[in-house]
View 1: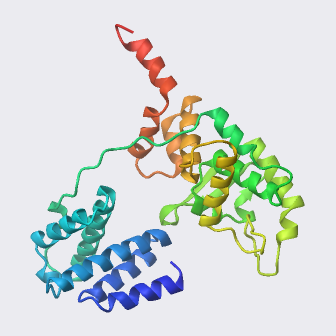
View 2 (view 1 turned 30 degrees about the vertical axis):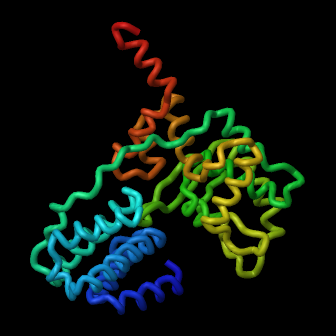
View 3 (view 1 turned 45 degrees about the vertical axis):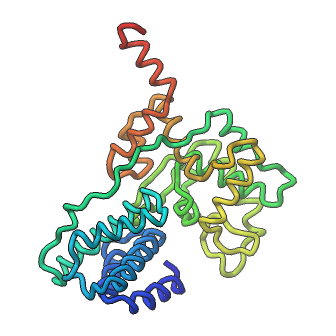
Length: 312
């Protein structure tokens, strides 16, 4: 979380009655749990909004909270038009805060685990077919001033399934081009090693030799992907670059960096990769999260149906 955003959140928490607990909770998530900056900011905003609700309803401390208060808050979010996923995230933030408050001795009992949020439909991820992905990878052209960087970035994203924040955080020292692997840090600063294919290795080498030396400034450090000003390309920059070339390749306007991550997993499974290996490369803590990609591969489902259904 940036210093400005953290300072702003702290100032707002001071206006809430349980702000001190919330501040210490966010510090705990940052230092002890090692959560990503964007996750911390999301939890902070949710708790700030809940704090305003409590102050409006004369709830002074966490000890005064009752289940009905939290359900009233969730209903107010629904009435305001918030999506079910956002309401669930708000409830998760409250549950985590209360669990921390018990651990820190601020409250004696935690009733939050008994609370249920709205049920969510599990949506299948959007996946582009292999031909469309190849069109995207070939979209950067020589006339583009940062063609070599952008092509290296797209190839790396598809070759590794990295998230945008993970790709933005890569340093040259994290990429072993001789052996062919990338070391990246995912959610909770969990480190994982992902193999890197020959095509991705080739374009990254060209980028490092021909374009990156032109972008380097004294403050550039060891970051792999640099902007025109020599600073590190951030997560938002990567999203914009992918959107730009997706539109050029005639792909859906909704295609994102995460779509390439979905494509990486689905194409691996359709090629015969085992689920456990894909889970490890994606950095999923639970294999159930990875398993959704088996439902996306229509060719695989069709072959299974044909092979095992008695009337197929």
